[in-house]
Length: 420
Image (cartoon, rainbow, N blue to C red; front, side, top):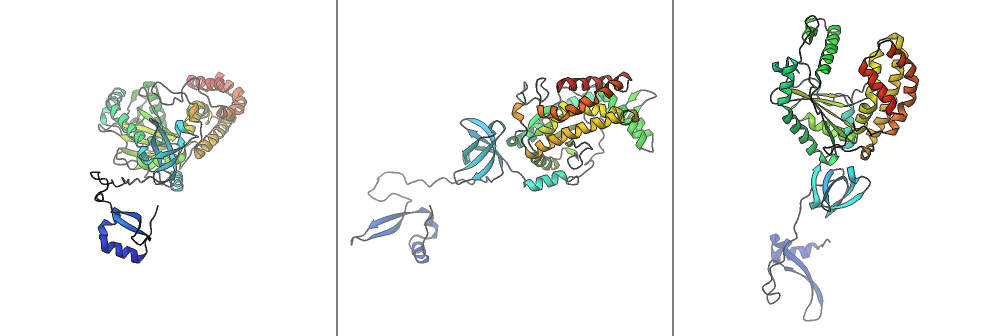
C-alpha cells in the first residue's frame, strides 16, 4: 500500500521528526478533545509509555534485493524438491515460473527466497543471431598451435598424457553444467579413451587429406609415415571427449557465450553458423588442460544429438564410403536426402525447444542415456524409412562388391532393423 502526502504535510512532518526518521513512522487516526477525527503520524522506534510496557519495539520488515527478471532460468525449491524453470512473471514476494525438465508443463508460484540458482540469459534475439553468425566468436587457435605436447607423439604417450588429465577435464565440464544447471543439461562423457584402431584410422585419413591439400608432403608424414607404418598422434585432439546437450538453440547460444570467455577454451568451431551440406550443426570446442593435453567438448541440442547418434551416423558412413564413386552416385544421393530430412526435423525441434527428453531412459549415473538400446524416437525413423528402403538394393550391391567396410555394413544393417 502506498501513502501519499501533500507538500505542506510532508514539510510539517520533516520539521517535527527530521528527515532521517520518516521510515519509522506509523499512520494513526485519532479523535481529539473536541470530537474531531484526524490523521497523525507517530514514531515506532519505541513503545508508547503505558502501552505494552516491556514489549520490544516492532521490527522493521526484512527487505530483500532480489534481481530476478523475466526470462531468467532458475533452480528452485518446491516442497523440498529441487526443480527447474523459467521466470515468466515477477512480483514483490516471488516469481511465476514455467517448469522445465521434470517440471515441464507445470506453473509454479515461487517465493524469492526459494530460488536457489539463477542463470541470466542473454536476449533471445541476440542469442540466436550470435549463434547463427559464424563470425560471432573468434575462429582459429587461441594461444596455441593446436598440437598436443611432445609426450603425445606416440599412441602410448597420448593415452598416458590424456589419462593423467581426465579428472581435470571432468571438473571443467561439471563447472559448465553447474553454471547452467537451470537449463537441465544432459552430460555425456566418454567412458573410455578413443580406441587405438580408430586413432590409427583417423591419422591415415588425415594424412591422405594433408597430402592432397598441402604442397609440402612432409606435413602428411608428420601424421602418418606409410613406409615405416609410424603414427604421430599430436594432432589427435578428441582422444577424450564430452558432450553437453540442451533443449534449444537459444540454450546452446548462452553456453557458447560462456565458453567463449573461458581461458581453458583454445578453439571454438561454431557449425551452427556454417551447417553441413545436409543441415547438421553443433559447437565443437577444444579445451587445453594444465599438463598441455587438448581434449574435445561438444555442445548441441538433445534433438540434434539423438538424430545424429541414433540415426544419422549410419547414413553418413554409407554416404562417405561411396560419395567419390560415380557408380554409386545414386546411393550417395539417397543417403544425402535421408540426412536432410532427418536434420530438418531435428532443427525444428531445436528451434522450438520441445524435443521430448522425458522419453529418454536414465543411465546408471542418473543422466539421460540416448544410447539405451530400447530408446527410439519414432518421428526420426519415419523421416528416413522411405529413403532407407529405396537404398537397400544399391547398398546390397555395394556390400557384395566390397565397397563398404565391415563397420559401415554393421552400422547400416543395425539402422535398418532399428527403424522397422
